[in-house]
Image (cartoon, rainbow, N blue to C red):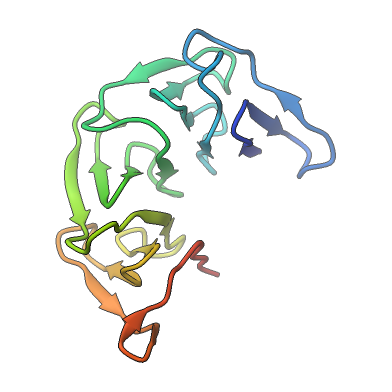
Length: 171
């Protein structure tokens, strides 16, 4: 299954993008937009979405949603570990939060100290899910190989200044 958030709603495709259907509006998505969505690859009934005001979860493929309690919510990005649906990454501003229990508890895993930094992309390696990459608008690319305990900056700079990153992909 594929999921898309386009800023006003969430959409889902069950045929590799051949056709799309809007997920039902709820009190969490109506007038709050659909900014980021993540469908678990092994369990398409598990769907997480980010709206302007909430991080929400569905256990029935997007038919209904319930809010999750997060340290900071609105306009972030959510990514579900491709192998373990209980592991979730949520980016808000310059911070990436991690949860190992389906969003019941969260811990700050990464936070940039650079002025005006924002996390723009979070990607989990499909083979080694302890490896996570993040991209930032002005603090480069960061990588963890231990599930977020420690992070190392990867070199992608322009004369000593990190290049802005809008997306990170792993093949």
